[in-house]
Image (cartoon, rainbow, N blue to C red; front, side):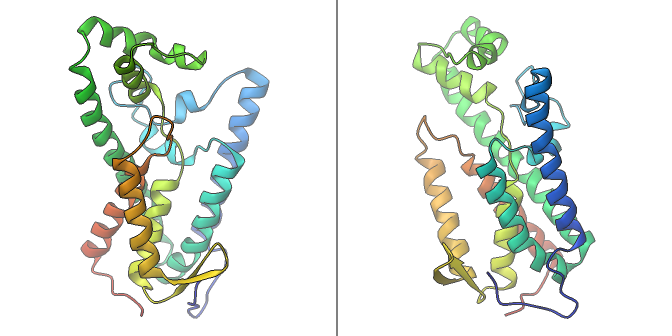
Length: 246
């Protein structure tokens, strides 16, 4: 919830509305293709690491419209509407869409840079033959619910062959923008705890940074993509020299 309602405010402005529709179509399409044709669209539209045989340049865009579950898409779309409707009314549709897409692309670029560094740290423990085997066959193992026994090989396989999906990077960019534009507006955490937007953004950013640094093997959240969305959002707002409202 937020305390801002400019003149001509729309609770479902055009860009937010169309982003919600497109994300919904992609999600339903994923379910239909998997059930009717046994085709996993995540293989084609999720963002694979640049060195993976499954990587395609268009995935830099399409990954942000893919979601893995109803809970995943619901939370992202709720946040898109919650923060996006205010920002689009404030900025206008053209600037809002530009911001959303750039933060989404920036998010995955940061995630891929972090993945590159992690991959280089793991590859020193493996031979070139092992690495080639992981790149060529590792994804098929994962699709069968398997992985390599060797811990380094298993970790490298996950880094190479688990695609990144979701609008979270762009959504975190929206969260950052809302906190910068309306720092003293109230956000109700869990619909009950009032907190000023600027503090909410800081706390959430620190949580993501801590989670990214101390991530576990069971953590499938792209924390650095979230931070990347916030970083690119901050840079864009500074570049555009947009002034805050309160």
